[in-house]
Amino acid sequence: MTEAPLKGIHVLDFMWVMAGPAATQYLSQYGATLVRVESASRIDTARTLQPFKDGQSGPERSGLYANLNYGKLNLALNVTNPAARPVLDRLVRWADVITESFSPKGMASMAMDYEACKKLNPGVIMLSSCLNGHYGPEAQLAGFGTMGAQLAGFGELAGWPDRAPAGPFGAYTDYIAPKFTVVALLAALEYRRRTGKGQYIDLSQAEASQQFLGPALLDYTVNGVVDSRAGNTSQEFAPHGVYPCRGEDDWVAIVCETEDQFAALATATGNAAWATDPRFATHDGRLANRDTLDALLGEWTATRTRDEAESLLIAAGVPAHRVSGASDLATDPQLMHRGHFGKVSNAELGEVTVETSRMRLSRTPQVPLASTPTLGEHSQEVLSGMLGFSEDEIVELVAAGAIE
Image (cartoon, rainbow, N blue to C red; front, side, top):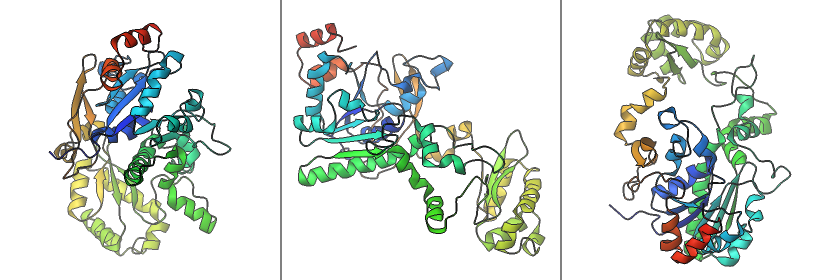
């Protein structure tokens, strides 16, 4: 195997929950050494979130935490304890990159903001990732990705026009922001490679996620149009939706973007007359009569299983796919072929399934999977082996409550 592209890069990681750890996970997957800082008095919230192994809760049993943190080194350091200061200082000097996802006051309260860290390590790169960034009138507003999705504008667009905003599933912005985080960090590392200079990156999770709403934002800035909830319909295409199939809560998604695709749909469903029906024969006609068309198409899909409908339509050249659930994804042949899922374990969690990198780099593949860390599992290794603390010094740190 070619040497991992980020081998030798040291990351001091104060990220927590989802948006931050998902970003630093990419760095770990490609060879960076990550020291993840937690403490018994402030564990990562992700440790308290489902799913739990065998349905039993506990700080070492969260599948979410395992998925986001395998391969990282875990240091149990109480950063609010004054006795932890020497450890923090050595960590800053060790690090190439420092990442954090506290509210804007968090790092400054520990004298760990960028200006303070730069005095110890002039070439360090620091990235802060929080809801609204560190500057501006709403910067101090703290929150999670469910709130970020509403700030970014997703709630107004997700759902049906006759119902309250639904919002997308889960802490949606937590799944978007990490991609921007990784790109920004790689750019900063490349800049430092060329110039020797570090820098500070201030990332707003809500702002980054607005990139997914470009058409809606442009429609307002250019046309003064405020887009709102429209269910599964599209302003440009019909049919465009999710249709019921035979079976319990089974569905198939179908879209026709061209005249050829609609003609193929009409033929495949045994309704060739649709292609010449004045209501459906043109693009504008289909948009104007979408409700009627959706009802007719739903009658056809309801007599078939989702797999039957998908196979028949794809064979005819119509974009269609069953609506997949978690059980489908876990056995999906495409994901299995690409090695999307892997196995990791630790002494308390046992073996669990995690997601590997979404990318397949031909020359620099992901490093082999490593275990998910338990709280403080690598404290001795980090303090002694990486930072050079003596055994007596470590005993003093433990006695002072800095190491938990």
